[in-house]
Length: 118
Image (cartoon, rainbow, N blue to C red; front, side, top):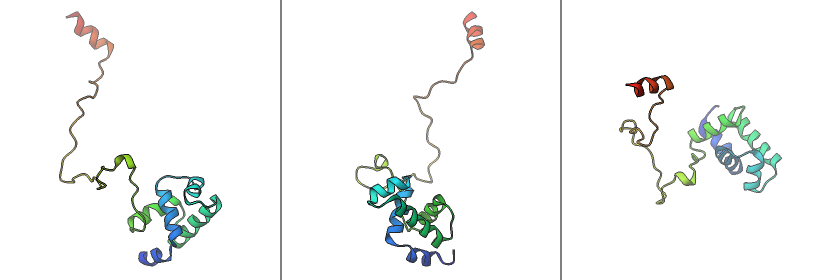
């Protein structure tokens, strides 16, 4: 890529929309249904966007587009707080506490027999 801002300006609004839907993990057919365009048109938009970005696969195109701020990082509706804010972990906090409902470590049959005979 020559200049990332140059690539962003060259991507059409529709190419950015298609990349945004690809970021959600939708297939070409599904993207076509959402944007009400033919599957082949989706393929054409992706190919054109990737060519402009000098990339060869859609995953890399999505990652670059997110990194450059051309599309938003998709967040599942169920992961969003009700107030609409984005819930980001605090990088200064340590690891999460172990789950209290986790199963105890497995004990093999020989250990159980030894312990029950005493």
